[in-house]
Image (cartoon, rainbow, N blue to C red; front, side):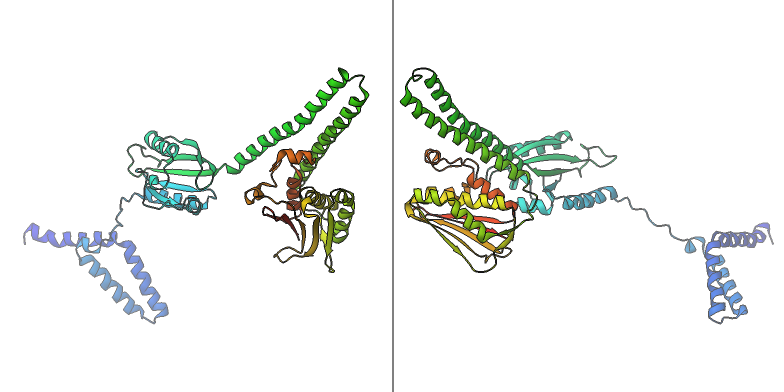
Length: 428
């Protein structure tokens, strides 16, 4: 036998032993299986040994690669991009403000529920310009995409209604990637409504302008009459008495305006605090009627009071509710004089969530329907000169609205030209 032939069996034995050592973990597992069969399956020790040896021999004699345990293949998936996309969608849906996600071509990838409600024309898969063509918004999107920096604009829309939004266009940059070389780059657009803030600012400006105007007019009259009394009419007794009477009227007008402004300020200050007092509405309405009887007789108006027989107790601030019904009845007497009668009634409310309804009806000239929604605005007057002659401040119905809101009630005003006006106050 030559040397090569004698070395072959030794080589094969070394290979088999090496292969068994390499599979020691697998052999340990197989041994564990046979031990379990001996304990729980009733396999004899001899049978277990024979089986284990047979498996080990088979593993030693098989080609090396046939028993190799395959390593899991690592797939180079763009995992961060996938995760980023899904995380952005979840984040957008959690926002209460409208939010849009765009790809690098400005195509909408995702719109959260708030965006779908505010912009029903926005659809996934369509370019943003299909539904939103505001030039400022388009320029902000282009600039953010071109520079990779955040852009912020104020978006003003007038159709279908006037709205203002603060819009932030922010690039979504993936970690470790260059914005300009990333084909999967995206933009996040968020909209924060500024409409209420703008309206409050407008109301504040109008309020200051109107209040200044209302005070300036009687103040100018007072100064003019004072100058006259100090000058040409200094010794004219008849002129002095006439001018002093006018001056008193102008001073009363300013005093009434200041009182209304202070009252409105106090109501707004406590509007979030619900009243806790107990009030008999029937007794309150009788008192309001008695307090205005002299004014009603002077205007040749008959005030008719209709109260239902059931319980009329409610929770509220007595002084404020007195002011509500005094204002409403006073307006009905001033502006409904042509009808010769005013009705005020208390009845059970048929509207869910409310217990009582107080109704004030006059039979005067009424107003055009387009004026009705604005009657509760501060200083809003249909005929400013007529209102001033009747010593109106333009704040009465604004005060009424705020008091009713504080009492968690509702105010309803209905009017047509020639049919007078009906005001319903619903209280819980």
